[in-house]
Length: 156
Length: 106
Image 1 (tube, rainbow over the protein chains, first blue to last red):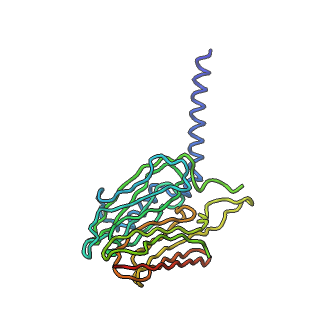
Image 2: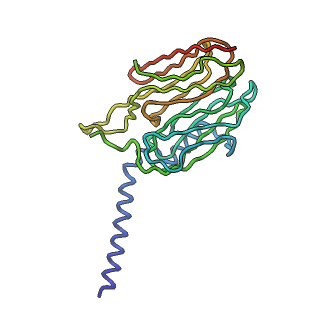
Image 3: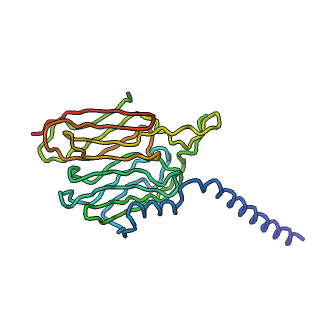
């Protein structure tokens, strides 16, 4: 007698959790998605291929507080007049908007790197893309686990 | 006028790469948070940061709401001549802050 009821119970809970998952996906669609990030990346590169390397994206792998996350991006480049980094873009998958920061630099910078602090709304993948003076694109990814998310908290 | 903390070396050798650090007090309200009245708090962010060295633009950043409150930025530039380093922040609701630092290059 306990067999079938247990089976039904498991089935029902399965259906319920599926329903909850679908329901939860609804309001999230207003946020950035990996597809939106892909679209933004295509806009940045203009459809040109990107190569992994030369860029170093430094983010802590585990973040306690998503409201301030230290981030350093550096690009391996001699920064001479004919070989330098033009722009560094940082994009994300799951914040409300896919863009984070866009830095325009030039040979006057001497070193192609910058540091700042960012907000992260969820555990996600961050990508830094560097556009070189010769028109090539290089990138680096960082996976981050966020325990306290930014953007979600209400003011009480 | 927002309070800004800027760190630029006062002296540098010619051709040396110097690091500039800048911090400004700003709430960087993302425009995605809900206030006590249940309404979305309007976005109020710093949109751009620029650095000019003797009038020539050396570094520029475009911020999104994903930049943390009191935005901090650190970058480098090559010390070419003695002169003025001007840092400018511009943002929503007509926000503007300008910091000027002198540098002596030997």
